[in-house]
Length: 159
Image (cartoon, rainbow, N blue to C red; front, top):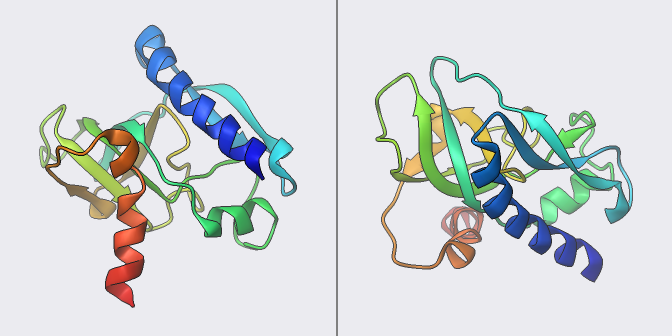
């Protein structure tokens, strides 16, 4: 179990530096190739998905690791197809969108709504998500701390 946390921690650092180098032509993403042990997650380069109407491109600064993602990786989420960029939550900055709802660079988060299950999620340098699952926020917390808050807040508020 510790190897997956170490691997994803290393991946977060790779996001920081590779996203600067790639300038959004390609992105690094942790791709779950198939169901199985942590070794089925592989860092890959992917081309950037074009922004579409009612979707927001987010430059990811941090993401949480959740038990539901563990279950998905193990194959216990029958509606998830592999390979998949998992991650049911992320925080970062608004990069690009067509609605004009958010300013470029504005702090935003995304949670649930199919992210990391129905479409690629937060284990990447950038992600593209539906506008309705994006929320703005202001915080002085470090990104590494704030990355775990959205799903945790959702769990607590739903209890």
